[in-house]
Image (cartoon, rainbow, N blue to C red; front, side, top):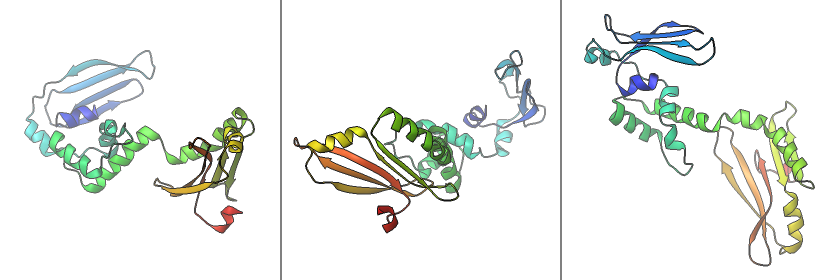
Length: 224
């Protein structure tokens, strides 16, 4: 309904909200627009019982008091823009599209927060992903027997680095040239890290990834 109100340029307020019913009315006095829904058999699913979509108020008066949608609302509206990881869709693009398509004027910071919310909807929270690492590495080690997996944490149980070598890379090394190339790249996320990848080349000239690691920074202690 929040999306609907943004698209149709009006405001509503909640008259009643409970586990069993949801009732919305227009913010303008004496307007007949309303929306009612009730729970189906006391479940979390709701069914629309009554929806009067006609505004008897002046929408010009309605838009004059229109509140800006929250970052979560705008973020959920622009999710399709980020479904392809290769797509570049900046906060400035969000500003321009919301203004041209919905007549909503956002500041750059509001658009930036909306982008962050959209990415969270798609990818989840980074902290949750880090919390899943021990389980993921355990399954990885049990599935690919002979693999080498190391997870290092600080004394207060915070992530420090992870190192992974899959068993197929270990067995394939025997048939590769005795040259290893290590390359790194910065991970640009909420938690700044560096990803290192070690690769080699087989007799046919095909690149074979040997190992990868995610570290906090490049330092002497890491190589030890």
